[in-house]
Image 1: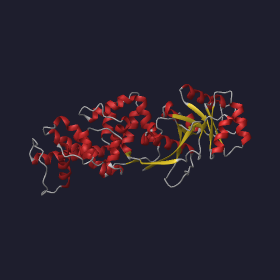
Image 2: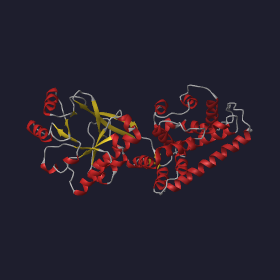
Image 3: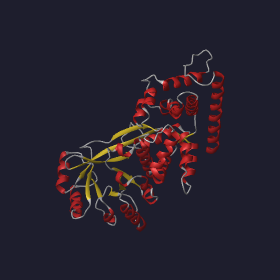
Image 4: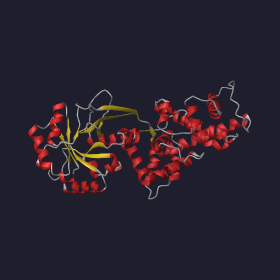
Amino acid sequence: MEAYIARQPIFNCRKKVEGYELLYRDSLTVNQANISNGCQATSRLLSDAITVFGLPQLTNWRPAYINFTKDLIMNDFVLLAQPQDIVVEIVEDIKITNVLLQKLQFLKDEGYVLALDDYTGDPAFQRLLPYMDIVKVDFRLTDYDTQRRIANNLKDSSITLLAEKIETEEEFVRSMHLGYQLFQGYYFEKPVILHRTLPSIAASSYGRILRELHQDEIDFDRCAHIIHSDVVLTYRIMQKIQTLQYYRGNIITAIKLALVMMGTQEFRRWTLLLLARENNVTRFDELVRQSYLRGIFIERLMLESNMAKYSDRGFLLGMFSLLDQILGIEMSELLQEINVPVVISEVLLDKAENEYSRFLDYAMTYEKGDPNAELPDLDLRICPEQVAMLYMECIRETDHIFNELGEVSR
């Protein structure tokens, strides 16, 4: 699957970037998206921004301006993003109710910054203004008198005025003289469409994780084992935490400690955002199954060698050796998103021949089943017949896990 986001910078009077508006897009070839459902568009946008692109990295640690519909605000979808990361834009056609105003006050109390989009001075929006930190005025939809009247009416308030759709130097200078403090439009920069391939995660993994989220207390041990069985989820959790600082030769322990580091609330938020994108799940395919089988085979081989204490690195190596094919992304790009032991990354990038590369070569050769193929010498403590039995045990274990996951997903 593909993920697209359009990003347009927002500037201050000195033409320094203060933030970015993020806009939903569904392809690279169009500058406007075909949006039939505003809730769905924002759900996908926020989900992709946080879980695929990484929101702070996407905006260079500046706030992201994102449109939210009334339904998403009332359903607390805003809370899936951290207050310091976003500006909540209230769309211009929102229906104002007392319940909505209470929710806006709650968001402000939680630290969220609120912005009113496409304000024209309409008295119908007067009730919203006390809750707003920023008011955006579209310079294509309003004339000079309206722009001036809005600025005069709000000049003694704490509201920051943002002039959007600025297209000329003259409009920029004029809006500054009127008292506008933030600026956005083609005069500065057009929206740039960013693209990434969206990794597919097994439907069964979602189902199992979702059940854990519904427990009063999340069992991080069970969650770690679920993530461990899905190569994409393993990659995504490592991408999320950006480090394996807790890696101590045991990948399941590393995953569990990463979840503990995130905490229950953050883990729930992260998982729900993964679920927020419609149709973002698939069943396990053969390539994912093969990656798991390769991972546990290398792990078991290393347990029968003088590399036994590093066996979990073997699992990581085997599983990630097919990740570029699964995700359709160059291995060099994938490894920029996560930190794995250098000895592993060098093998995955085909930059080194070492004890780990020999185990990977052994597994890849063994998979082909060619009786005439020459296997690398691993100095194993077991004979070839026992290796064959070990491989069959790995196949049975893989079949058992994936059959179990398949039953869960149905």
